Length: 192
Image (cartoon, rainbow, N blue to C red; front, side, top):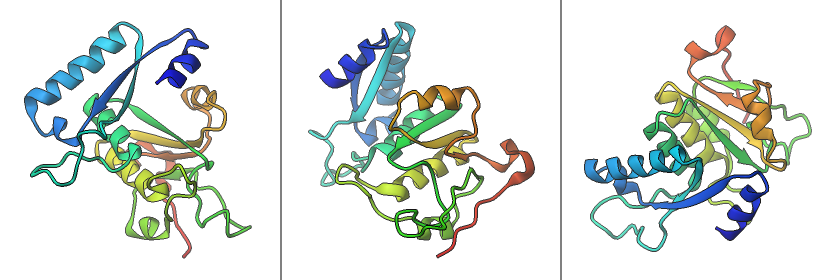
Protein backbone atom coordinates (compact mmCIF):
# COMPACT_ATOMS: atom_id res chain seq x y z
CA UNK A 1 0.00 0.00 0.00
CA UNK A 2 2.91 2.35 0.60
CA UNK A 3 3.84 2.00 -3.08
CA UNK A 4 0.27 2.81 -4.16
CA UNK A 5 0.23 5.76 -1.75
CA UNK A 6 3.48 7.16 -3.15
CA UNK A 7 2.47 6.68 -6.79
CA UNK A 8 -0.99 8.21 -6.40
CA UNK A 9 0.43 11.10 -4.36
CA UNK A 10 2.42 11.99 -7.49
CA UNK A 11 -0.97 12.64 -9.11
CA UNK A 12 -2.36 14.51 -6.09
CA UNK A 13 -4.67 11.64 -5.14
CA UNK A 14 -5.24 9.68 -1.96
CA UNK A 15 -5.88 5.94 -1.77
CA UNK A 16 -7.58 3.69 0.74
CA UNK A 17 -7.23 -0.07 0.94
CA UNK A 18 -10.29 -2.29 0.97
CA UNK A 19 -9.79 -6.04 1.49
CA UNK A 20 -12.64 -8.29 0.36
CA UNK A 21 -13.63 -11.91 0.30
CA UNK A 22 -16.05 -13.27 -2.31
CA UNK A 23 -18.77 -13.98 0.22
CA UNK A 24 -19.27 -10.28 1.04
CA UNK A 25 -21.29 -10.09 -2.18
CA UNK A 26 -23.29 -13.21 -1.30
CA UNK A 27 -24.61 -11.73 1.96
CA UNK A 28 -26.88 -8.69 1.49
CA UNK A 29 -25.84 -6.82 4.65
CA UNK A 30 -22.13 -7.31 3.92
CA UNK A 31 -22.67 -6.28 0.31
CA UNK A 32 -24.40 -3.06 1.36
CA UNK A 33 -21.58 -2.22 3.79
CA UNK A 34 -18.92 -2.78 1.12
CA UNK A 35 -20.76 -0.70 -1.47
CA UNK A 36 -21.35 2.07 1.12
CA UNK A 37 -17.63 2.04 1.94
CA UNK A 38 -16.65 2.34 -1.72
CA UNK A 39 -19.17 5.15 -2.20
CA UNK A 40 -17.89 6.99 0.90
CA UNK A 41 -14.28 6.73 -0.28
CA UNK A 42 -15.15 8.04 -3.74
CA UNK A 43 -17.25 10.87 -2.23
CA UNK A 44 -14.10 12.01 -0.41
CA UNK A 45 -12.02 11.70 -3.63
CA UNK A 46 -10.16 8.71 -2.19
CA UNK A 47 -9.36 6.00 -4.73
CA UNK A 48 -10.20 2.56 -3.35
CA UNK A 49 -7.43 0.00 -3.83
CA UNK A 50 -9.34 -3.25 -3.64
CA UNK A 51 -7.72 -6.62 -3.15
CA UNK A 52 -8.63 -10.05 -1.92
CA UNK A 53 -8.30 -10.50 1.83
CA UNK A 54 -5.88 -13.42 1.61
CA UNK A 55 -5.59 -13.78 5.37
CA UNK A 56 -9.20 -14.99 5.71
CA UNK A 57 -10.04 -16.19 2.19
CA UNK A 58 -9.79 -19.96 2.16
CA UNK A 59 -11.32 -22.71 0.08
CA UNK A 60 -11.94 -24.86 3.17
CA UNK A 61 -14.91 -22.83 4.42
CA UNK A 62 -18.47 -23.97 3.78
CA UNK A 63 -19.07 -20.95 1.55
CA UNK A 64 -17.20 -19.12 -1.19
CA UNK A 65 -14.51 -16.76 0.06
CA UNK A 66 -11.82 -16.68 -2.62
CA UNK A 67 -11.90 -14.79 -5.91
CA UNK A 68 -8.84 -16.62 -7.19
CA UNK A 69 -7.43 -13.62 -9.04
CA UNK A 70 -7.71 -9.86 -9.23
CA UNK A 71 -9.13 -9.87 -12.76
CA UNK A 72 -12.34 -11.54 -11.63
CA UNK A 73 -12.38 -9.49 -8.41
CA UNK A 74 -12.21 -6.27 -10.43
CA UNK A 75 -15.06 -7.36 -12.72
CA UNK A 76 -17.25 -8.35 -9.79
CA UNK A 77 -16.64 -5.04 -8.04
CA UNK A 78 -17.19 -3.09 -11.29
CA UNK A 79 -20.50 -4.90 -11.78
CA UNK A 80 -21.56 -4.31 -8.16
CA UNK A 81 -20.86 -0.56 -8.33
CA UNK A 82 -22.50 -0.36 -11.77
CA UNK A 83 -19.36 0.95 -13.46
CA UNK A 84 -19.71 1.65 -17.18
CA UNK A 85 -16.24 0.41 -18.04
CA UNK A 86 -13.51 -1.69 -16.45
CA UNK A 87 -9.95 -1.02 -17.61
CA UNK A 88 -7.63 -3.98 -17.09
CA UNK A 89 -3.94 -3.21 -17.47
CA UNK A 90 -1.61 -6.09 -18.26
CA UNK A 91 1.81 -6.82 -19.72
CA UNK A 92 0.28 -7.42 -23.16
CA UNK A 93 -1.41 -4.99 -25.56
CA UNK A 94 -4.73 -6.87 -25.58
CA UNK A 95 -6.20 -10.13 -26.85
CA UNK A 96 -4.51 -11.60 -29.91
CA UNK A 97 -5.80 -14.22 -32.32
CA UNK A 98 -2.80 -16.37 -31.29
CA UNK A 99 -0.04 -16.02 -28.69
CA UNK A 100 2.16 -13.14 -29.98
CA UNK A 101 5.14 -14.53 -28.07
CA UNK A 102 5.00 -17.68 -30.20
CA UNK A 103 3.63 -16.52 -33.55
CA UNK A 104 5.06 -13.63 -35.57
CA UNK A 105 1.82 -13.24 -37.55
CA UNK A 106 -0.35 -12.71 -34.45
CA UNK A 107 -2.69 -9.76 -34.68
CA UNK A 108 -4.51 -7.80 -32.01
CA UNK A 109 -8.26 -8.22 -31.78
CA UNK A 110 -9.64 -4.73 -31.18
CA UNK A 111 -13.26 -5.68 -30.52
CA UNK A 112 -14.84 -8.74 -28.89
CA UNK A 113 -18.58 -8.98 -28.31
CA UNK A 114 -18.72 -12.51 -26.93
CA UNK A 115 -16.25 -14.66 -25.02
CA UNK A 116 -16.76 -17.97 -26.79
CA UNK A 117 -15.44 -21.42 -25.93
CA UNK A 118 -13.02 -21.08 -28.85
CA UNK A 119 -11.62 -17.84 -27.41
CA UNK A 120 -11.24 -19.42 -23.96
CA UNK A 121 -9.60 -22.50 -25.46
CA UNK A 122 -7.08 -20.33 -27.28
CA UNK A 123 -6.09 -18.45 -24.11
CA UNK A 124 -3.00 -19.49 -22.22
CA UNK A 125 -1.93 -19.36 -18.58
CA UNK A 126 -0.06 -16.60 -16.80
CA UNK A 127 2.84 -15.20 -18.77
CA UNK A 128 4.78 -13.66 -15.88
CA UNK A 129 5.98 -14.85 -12.53
CA UNK A 130 3.68 -12.27 -10.92
CA UNK A 131 0.46 -13.30 -12.69
CA UNK A 132 -2.13 -15.63 -11.21
CA UNK A 133 -4.25 -16.45 -14.20
CA UNK A 134 -3.07 -14.94 -17.43
CA UNK A 135 -5.49 -14.39 -20.28
CA UNK A 136 -8.11 -16.90 -19.10
CA UNK A 137 -8.95 -14.87 -16.00
CA UNK A 138 -9.06 -11.67 -18.03
CA UNK A 139 -11.48 -13.30 -20.45
CA UNK A 140 -13.68 -14.45 -17.56
CA UNK A 141 -13.66 -10.89 -16.23
CA UNK A 142 -14.58 -9.61 -19.69
CA UNK A 143 -17.44 -12.09 -19.86
CA UNK A 144 -18.73 -10.86 -16.48
CA UNK A 145 -18.79 -7.31 -17.83
CA UNK A 146 -20.40 -8.29 -21.15
CA UNK A 147 -23.12 -10.24 -19.34
CA UNK A 148 -23.81 -7.14 -17.22
CA UNK A 149 -24.18 -5.07 -20.41
CA UNK A 150 -20.96 -3.20 -19.65
CA UNK A 151 -17.56 -2.73 -21.24
CA UNK A 152 -14.05 -3.91 -20.39
CA UNK A 153 -10.90 -2.67 -22.11
CA UNK A 154 -7.69 -4.71 -21.90
CA UNK A 155 -4.54 -2.66 -22.46
CA UNK A 156 -0.82 -2.73 -21.82
CA UNK A 157 -0.23 -1.02 -18.47
CA UNK A 158 3.49 -0.28 -18.93
CA UNK A 159 2.54 3.41 -19.05
CA UNK A 160 -0.28 4.17 -16.56
CA UNK A 161 -1.32 7.16 -18.67
CA UNK A 162 -2.92 4.61 -21.01
CA UNK A 163 -6.03 5.02 -18.82
CA UNK A 164 -6.35 8.60 -20.08
CA UNK A 165 -6.13 7.37 -23.68
CA UNK A 166 -8.87 4.80 -23.08
CA UNK A 167 -11.08 7.41 -21.42
CA UNK A 168 -10.48 9.76 -24.36
CA UNK A 169 -11.97 7.10 -26.65
CA UNK A 170 -8.81 5.96 -28.40
CA UNK A 171 -9.14 2.54 -30.03
CA UNK A 172 -6.30 0.84 -28.16
CA UNK A 173 -6.09 -2.62 -26.66
CA UNK A 174 -9.09 -4.91 -26.87
CA UNK A 175 -12.57 -3.62 -26.17
CA UNK A 176 -14.98 -6.24 -24.81
CA UNK A 177 -18.65 -5.25 -24.82
CA UNK A 178 -22.09 -6.52 -25.83
CA UNK A 179 -22.80 -6.53 -29.57
CA UNK A 180 -25.46 -3.86 -29.03
CA UNK A 181 -22.68 -1.42 -27.97
CA UNK A 182 -20.41 -2.24 -30.91
CA UNK A 183 -20.70 -0.52 -34.28
CA UNK A 184 -20.83 -3.17 -37.00
CA UNK A 185 -21.23 -6.02 -34.47
CA UNK A 186 -17.68 -7.30 -35.02
CA UNK A 187 -16.75 -10.66 -33.44
CA UNK A 188 -13.29 -11.98 -32.77
CA UNK A 189 -12.04 -15.19 -34.27
CA UNK A 190 -9.10 -17.15 -32.96
CA UNK A 191 -6.85 -19.64 -34.67
CA UNK A 192 -5.71 -22.66 -32.67
